[in-house]
Length: 360
Image 1 (cartoon, rainbow, N blue to C red):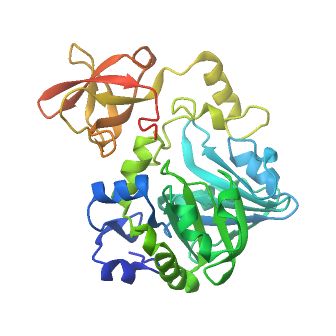
Image 2 (tube, one colour):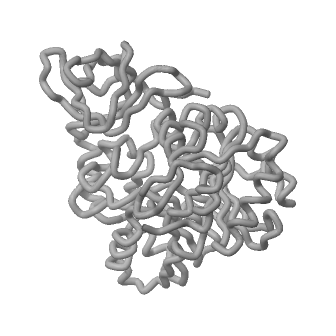
């Protein structure tokens, strides 16, 4: 099992550590609800150094990215980022990712930790245009500093005006006494904030400075459990739960990152699916009684017939009710539709709702 540059720090802080995507990661410190609330109301820091980073450079870098990704990366300008996914050749998704454009011949792809090797092989397989690829995953650490007070708490660490970094934009600048830090605003919590990409050897220094600067704002370390409840309240997909090699971006509600203005892997089949409409859709639901939906619980109709499975579920700390996502036939996918979640021997009534669950 791999460690991040900050693993010993998490252990010293009393974090509960668990194996995640091949890494020894902090799942919680003081408890998921308290950590969740810290991010929603103040500022918290996640170590997400397990994520993968691929540098794509050269004259044909954009050609390769356009081939493997569903979104239109030609729309990116310098200092902008884009959420996208990599469709496979059978209608599913290899991975979802974020694409950063530094200039016309330099891009960074940020991929999920559990898919680093798979993604690298997939992209390499399609690199007939000889773009230059470098896997930087083991060289970089990544801190996600999230919450409404993030900009104010971190401003003393950089000359860049943090409030000027718009959503899905980034700057390369000195931060916490370290040169050439990527400061981006692509957070997955729905509460604002920044991601800080630094070399492993600088990670501890940056972590310490971040906590010194944020002390007066009540900054706290946050584990992966709260990361999951925060992203689920926003209706954001998690690879391996809500999207995978068998789910299409159209079914998953990711039509907005699937642009048919260009050719990409399996674009013809996905275009046909979009035009004809998928047979099933990813929905969000709220349980009407007390109960917590969990991944793989059955979704049933009023006659007890299984119509789908929960892909992600939790007790929402912000809403104080059971929420979840799952795929159901399209006739059950309209907001307001009634479904039931099988929790042990009881089918609890639930309502399909428009996501995000948490409106802020």
